[in-house]
Length: 232
Image 1 (cartoon, rainbow, N blue to C red):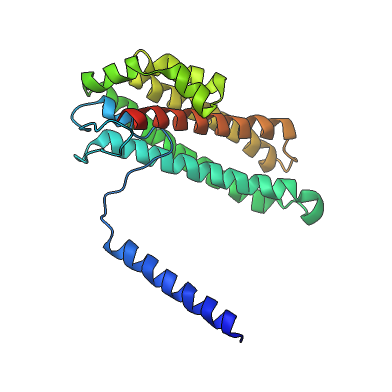
Image 2: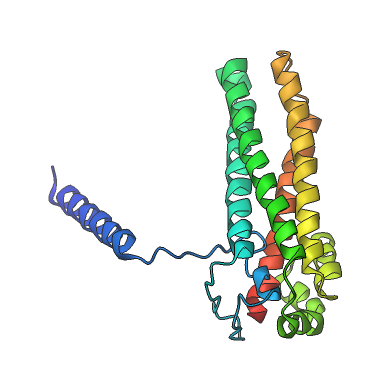
């Protein structure tokens, strides 16, 4: 083994040790970032609000932020499992297409998304019973959505949908929309599952629309997080 290889191996071991220590001593409270996170600040008494885009979420054991993170986690897991299926589909001409293997991938994506659906049902119910934080809602109403969309070069159609809810302070509407989007993806997933269960090669147009639905839902939730993060 060369000196370079020995040094590289030693550096890798040190890095893994440091990571292990960070994980071991890190606080157990974690905050999500990707799908509708920070929108919990629209409800009392979850956030203190720091302004300037700082992460100032205060953990109070709120069920709302827990449901947001659970839903996002299961949603992202489902999308990842579906992408694994797409990888096998893409390589089917080179590696063949095994129905048993792909069945398990689609079943896994469905299971994860069903779990996300439960989290979003619980989220909409919890938000419906929780009063708004009027201070944060007014920040949503007064936010410069046009400048943000142009500066960050966001997808106009998806951001327009997000803006329609947030500029009137309708965060509950965001959660309802997420639930409907998940229901739509589930319907499309079950259609693909039906084809595979019958040992039919899935229609590529169905897969295009399904992947598009995943991506647009992910982007929708991400744009919600971006705006709320800036205002928190």
